[in-house]
Length: 255
Image (cartoon, rainbow, N blue to C red; front, side):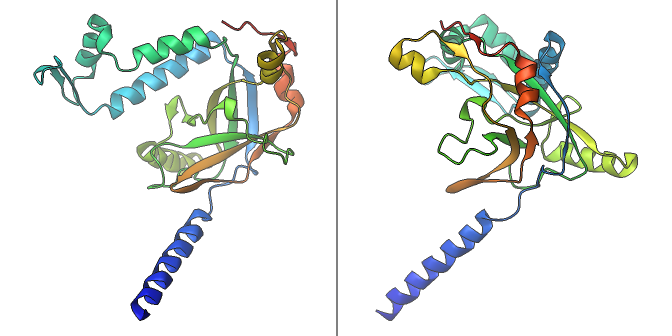
């Protein structure tokens, strides 16, 4: 019985430690400054695609393909990313994501993509916390369960056209010291706010809707198995968002 009580206290103590860690601070954005919010241009999207390609290259480890009978028919090391991509182009059936990407492209509307830039004097990336710096979106003053804007996704933050990770965080800190000025960051996200329930349940024409409240953007850190930790947000007036997307509401083509 004594051992059982001791074990229960140990478990409870471990849980309290985990909960305390879950409440640990995340870098705030409430003192950051919004420097731009606009529909992403074709040049912006090209920069974004280039950044994603660069990250894919830098994080590529290895890949191998079999004939389904246990025999390896192609194998690529960490320094053979170009050869790996060439193989997928020649053998699209081997691309594990191609079917999903194609299905999503056919099923999803062409959501408007927004580029949002902000400046901060803080060191935003916490080494060891996550692979990349990620943000979440909210309606600032909404207190119901609809507060989180899940349709906007959880995009990664960019700095000078590169995604912020552990290695880049060191460059950012050096730039902050040498330049002695706030650093500018950029986030790309799809604007997914429409009359989904009305359209699906009542058959109403699909429409892209204006944002009903101010937009809050906050750093989001994983905290498995607990809910992720979210820092204090950067607030953007809803009119800034809606004017960038004008006219709203407007018809939305659903495939």
